[in-house]
Length: 110
Length: 155
Image (cartoon, rainbow over all chains, first blue to last red; front, side, top):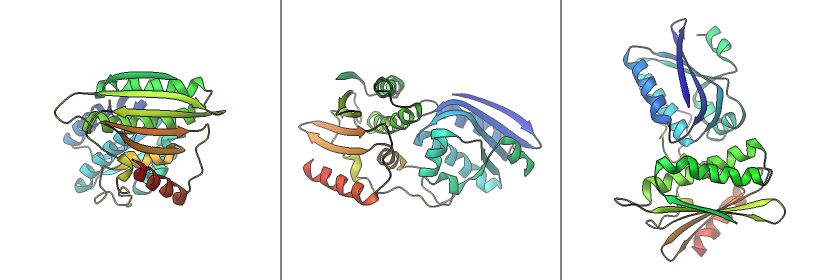
């Protein structure tokens, strides 16, 4: 999985590509932890390039959200598609997170 | 029938999952259906890597074979401590970030992604069997429950 971060309008946009499985979630968590430690609280995760996610990936997103909550942070999940979108719906994760059609529409309300 | 046996370690996860997706593709399953089956396989395999052999090492054996016109039977076997994943309680699906527990989603996702799932303990082995079709079955909670209860009795 590739993880890339960029910043727009006080929001960190984290683009993930490839597979978010039990092998690679540590990398994602480390990068997000660094961002949170440096004071960032507003995040958009761009799932546009993500082909696959398992429960390990979901748990990783949940862990990040829990870290942001006491900091009054904001986590928006954008551009979910295919099986990834399906997994979010089945697990009910689409109802606990703010989901946006695209990064642009997430930024528009950021 | 094709099979693969590897040590139950997370670093072997990709190879094991690829073996399962290879079987699905070989049968002409769509990419999205293959993805769903990969997900179910990963959830079961990760559980074995993490919990089947506490303080020791052991193997995971995977077997895939076709059944009937287009179904695939996938058997996931370990020689670890007895564990019936189908006996796990429903996960926490509350729509609340702060209170929602992080674990327990694996078996829930398996049930949603495969057409049938059965567990049996065979002498000193745990054997989890997935039966999959080219299409994910429309969900019917009642039938699913009956099946899993039956599976436990015969285990």
